[in-house]
Image (cartoon, rainbow, N blue to C red; front, side, top):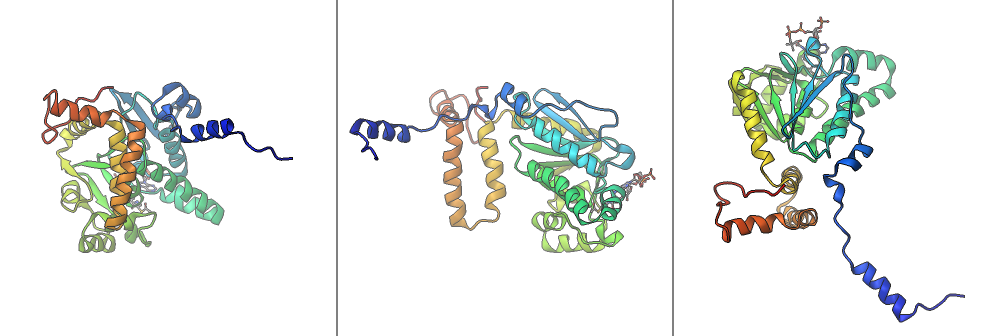
Amino acid sequence: MSKKPTKKAAAVKESKAAKPAEPVKSVSAAPTSDLLYPQPVAREGDPVAWKIEDGIAWVKFNRPDKRNCMSPELNRRMGEVLEAFEFRDDIGVLVLTGEGTAWSAGMDLQKYFRETEALGIEAIRKSQREAYSWWKRLRWYQKPTIGMINGWCFGGGYGPLHACDLAIASDDAQFGLSEINWGILPGGGATKVAVDSMSYRDAMWHAMTGEMISGKKAAEWKLINESVPADQLLARVTEVAKMLLSKNAVALKATKDAVRRTKEMTYENAEDYLIRAQEAANYFDSQGRKEGIKQFLDDKTYKPGLGGYKVKK
Ligand code: ACO
């Protein structure tokens, strides 16, 4: 026999439903994230290296003898490292760079293509998933990311390059869609990266000729943000990373996602998305923007047009 709910019970139910949920604290919490994401321990011959210093995670492709080309093992490891670092409290910005003379010479033609292909379609799909999944994770990473392109960057390297929010190279770094030089099309998103970043004519030239361009030219063609002389690269990237560290972290994550998402939206859809995205950001940080307004209007300690407010950490 079904019982009719009493007025009191109905009221309790209603008030429970109406109460907004508490913000999820673990956005930056350390102990929970350690449990969820065990921290990596460097091992002999690790294809990924890292160091965390002053809020910046310096993550490196670490196969300098193979010009940091991406083997399945490297891709798996990079996935683990990115996962482990994503919610750490002591990391505010992640920089992806390469050990030695290369950023990354693209996919490993021996291990990613030849050996995997010999094992058949299941192995091919597995290898693709392992590569594409860390690039995707990086595209939507919780922390802002900077690609520090210190040398060669070919083919498959364009996936992580595009995934980094900002990209700064040395003037003499070399970029190339070299796929055509060994007989395939620029896959794994590389064609899309060129088309999205460059003019139609430059993208077509780049993909069809397989000719390299320098860091300087890559900046002119808008594949990266800027290039600087090699001996200034580290200092410049550190400077940009520190600038990002001084910003509101919730607003930064919302902003970088908004730039990526709205690129493919109509104006109307983008307008609506941006309202929802800001309201969602308010849930994780209800005070930041109010503090920003206060420091300008009441405290008169800064001018938003000229710089950022002092973020309370
Ligand atoms: N796949 C497999 N092995 C590679 C790769 C690669 N992508 N790139 C470099 N290596 C290996 C070389 O075979 C060599 O191995 P070895 O020492 O056992 O002989 C070692 O790395 C060093 O390479 P070198 O060619 O000797 O280095 P160098 O500094 O003279 O040249 C360069 C660097 C220009 C990057 C050259 O190695 C090269 O052209 N690499 C291939 C670049 C490329 O086209 N990548 C594929 C893009 S397409 C895609 O990613 C889908």
